[in-house]
Length: 83
Image (cartoon, rainbow, N blue to C red; front, top):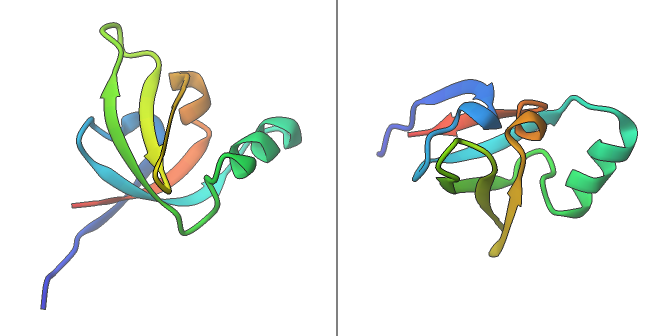
């Protein structure tokens, strides 16, 4: 059996090359709805591919789709990091 450690954090603090599972999105309704439309629903696995040189934006892979969000937006997404 493979043991997986889970650590709660925001998406903004997940290092590049790591994966996490969406827990909640704590933001105003319009922004929350936008992220839900992009596939960031609770239980979804997200991969953080890389960050821009100054740390903003983050490039993500969600359900096979690549997109970028600002670090300030990623701070509203609570995740469980997967190691």
